[in-house]
Length: 140
Image 1: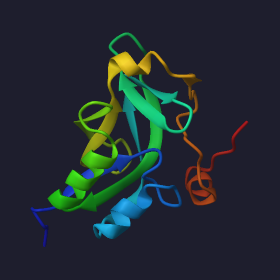
Image 2: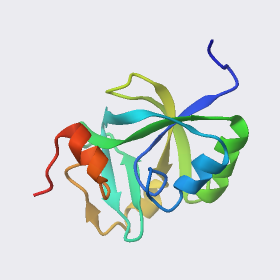
Image 3: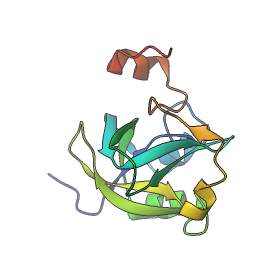
């Protein structure tokens, strides 16, 4: 039976398992649905202490790797607060490439994207050993 009160979120940085803000997903009874990725006209940016996805019309399609989680509306509200929505990050709906989920993703305000240190070309922010095994990935 599908719980229509639950929503899905694709996370790619500090909300991933073993990362600092994942405690919010745990605290709000988030359910890990699996490793996932998106393929969009976007870039994964290194903002220093955290990553950020920004959608641009003038870039090629690229992958961003992460995880898809299911959680309650209250849990999503807690994530909004932690992510500084809408001043720092905003949310938009995407469809994940691997799992095929319709999910929210946090995207950085495009004006703030200009302050990024660089683009993370391989689409991974600090991959965990489990992620590396799942995607058969080796950082070069």
